[in-house]
Length: 423
Image 1 (spheres, rainbow, N blue to C red):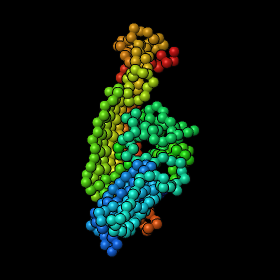
Image 2 (spheres, rainbow, N blue to C red):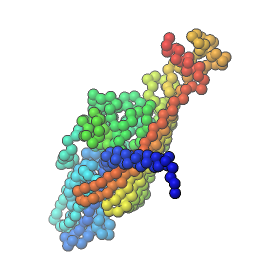
Image 3 (cartoon, rainbow, N blue to C red):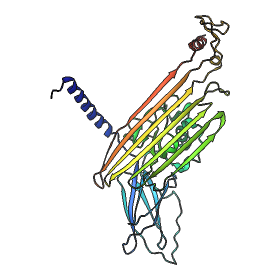
């Protein structure tokens, strides 16, 4: 079989690109959640089934409860890195409490032995955060989604930026979804399940993932650790929601309506078992003030946005797991007009005031400039547990932002606008 030189060069190029892509992406593959697993036994070392296992962090608000199976085993996956209170309760046994610190994607395993309850024994468990001492030296804020619904987000089209500014001290909100840390201008970045996203997070430049797809946030507004690169200020470490371990499917459907004719709708669903899981989120909004123009009376500022996010998890074996994030967002919005843009009169070379008619003899009309941003994201991650102290993680991602700007349907309106600005 004869192979042409062109084919050889093509195959060589593909192999080279693949090798470079492999070594470039594996260095950035990080994850921001861990797993807690264990076995619960009684004083005779017999397994205890049906026991309720709860972990809780009163600072971030994270709370999760599972039940042991017939073999006395329990597994809680996708736990954001933090210290937690663990409580085990089951009828006929004394309550058990312990503090656990989740700091690695290597699963934390516990063997818990329960004691029989006594009629004279009283145990009081109080939910307090004073004893949750962190060893993380970075200045940061932890927030779980239990707090999200209690925060009055003022900006539906950039709700993630709004959430960050409202729950984190030292970060100031700017227009159109931008925010600034102390002494910083747009030097922030997101890390979504370990995937770095350095796009400038503004409604004018890029699209954000929906808030209802987020499980927990760690906002580092001090000096970020070296693992996040050369960022000088704010890093938002995002852990998304997972359907793994959700044996009973559950979800939510929400609708809102507010000022400026802003209407939104959202749907999310989580389902799975111990071996796999899927979480999907669909969102859309439409409003008469998509961007943040300074005028009290909004002119030509309509916009809409559609979001879809899907996270898939597969536990291929006790030592191998696969995680996949899929996302697509489309936003379309008008460029807000000022009074001169809204009432463009005419253009005739260097002379304005032609009775409202352009050189073609037709009315000029207002400027009608629009923008559209399309974002898609694919991020697979494979994790292999080598031993109890070592884990290998390989990840890659493909992310694309496409920005299209559309001028007015009547080009003379834009020319009249430009001429009026120069004069």
